[in-house]
Image (cartoon, rainbow, N blue to C red):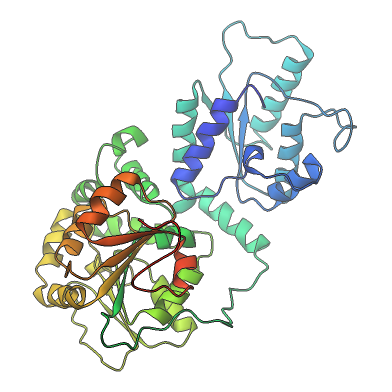
Amino acid sequence: MDDLANEREAVVEAINSLNFEPVNAEGILPNGGKSWDVLEPEIRTSLICILIQGERYGWIPQEGYGADQGKSVTHLEIDIARHEGIPILPFFKKLKYGADSTSADALLRDKFRKEIADWKDGVFRSEFNLASDLKDKVFRSLLDVLTGTYLRTAVETRVSKTATAPPTNYAIETPPPKPSTDVSTPPEVLFAGAGLSLSAGYPSANALAGVIGQALGLDPDQTSHHTLAQLFDVAETTLGRTRSISIVNELLNPPLPIEPTPAHVAAVQRFPVILTTNYDRLFELACDMLDITYIVRTPGDDVKDDATRAVTIFKIDGSIDRPETLVLSPADADRARNDASFWAKVENVLKTSRPIVIGHSMRDANSVNLMSKRNLEIKGVYVAPVIDPIDGRLLLDKLNLSGIESSASEYLWKKHTSTGHKTGDW
């Protein structure tokens, strides 16, 4: 493992950037078990196996598991992946001119590479020179998990074989705090951002940008120089509106099952009004799970108010089940801004309510603009696992938000007062 430290780190970064969960030896905490006993179940429950083969074959155990097989630990791990039917993505480091080809280790390395790439029983592999080169190739390969490709189908098959647990049953013994009935205090409104969707397992904005960029023929570096809105603007011109929406739909229907998190479940019980920039339907699904009535408002729709509904969800950037409402490109943003009735209702909520901001970076101009127009005499709350010092000193003070360092679920399931909080405040 010591000859591929930079490469392994680069692969982990690529995986994390897509909001996938990497399983690597460095990231597994010791639990008192033997090394192989800890690693093996992690391999068997993985959905994809990424093989990085360097200039060396690798360490061959002389005792314990695999000691009688004469194979490296990496080779043993690949054997497990093959036995379990886990899709394997092999990446071979290009061998330098004059690289060792005669030692016992080199002969085993070349034999292993040939086995992996064998035309009949092997898999297609890619080569790399530098860690940065490998990172880009892994990123692009993993994008295929999110699109209608062989790899997505393979992962869906893998998920169907390993999914044994039924959907989460939220039998709530201690419900989250109810909305305050004190008429002297402003009602709370939730302003939810992408962080809540990411915590449920949805792919990241990097993944969305990557898939769009790939469809436009851009490499990851070229894609990174443009905003999502710019990419969608070009995509709609080049690929058409229908294809652009289908890309978003694919990402919001990933091969891994996604359901509302405890934070979503708490939110629909705690807040009569929810504002969100997320396209997905996790809040709606949480309401369905708990038999809570709700109504969804998006810019440009013709849904009328319904006072009988317990929860009103304002989806500022549209909803995936109503493709015509999605705000993807600058033209969509202009169209959304023309719905004066929608924005009047949103602004009225923010003028009379105490905002609880969760899952938002608050670095995009639209969110900051919306929060700037609210009643700034009412102190709001900004919740994040870690609050950047610059955000704390500039953004939060400017928007009159009290910063709370906490996970979304932990915050929403605990009762907080409007005047003080525990450690982690700003």
